[in-house]
Amino acid sequence: MPFELLKSEPVFQGHAFKIRRDYLKTPDGHQTKYEIVEHVGSVVIIPIDEQGNLLFVRQYRPAVGMDLLELPAGTRNGDEPHEACAAREVREETGMAAGKLERIGDFYLAPGYSTEFMAVFLATELIYNPLKPDADEFLQLEKIPITKAIEMAEKGEIPDAKTLAALFLARTYLK
Image (cartoon, rainbow, N blue to C red; front, side, top):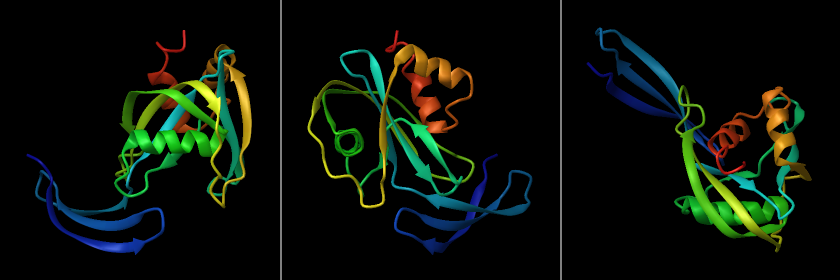
């Protein structure tokens, strides 16, 4: 027996996402409520240069109060196709355009409270062709050899979930 949606109400409208409150009837007949973050979706990109390095960005994340090492990523503009978003974001965040962009998987980022669905792209045949970064982005590009990046992830030195999930999905492509 599935959950039954009884009603849904808006709680907050932000620039990047909305929050709604859903009232549900559980399979055993009880009622409960959930606050859900509505997100248009996003991408994470695994850029690989000709020397076999992965291109990461280091950026300050206010929610956790620290700089994190992450694969380039970004939010779709409305109903922008995932591939177009990935092509734009890799240029904005690394300064490199992908001659080849291949979708290798996707996942829900935090399905316990969010609708955000991320598509994962492998970006190769990189050429210098930057786009201006978003006004609130202050990124430091870091090139890390594939084997070292995997080791860092395995040692817990990359605590960013989307980066870890993308590296896991890309493992067969990174050998």
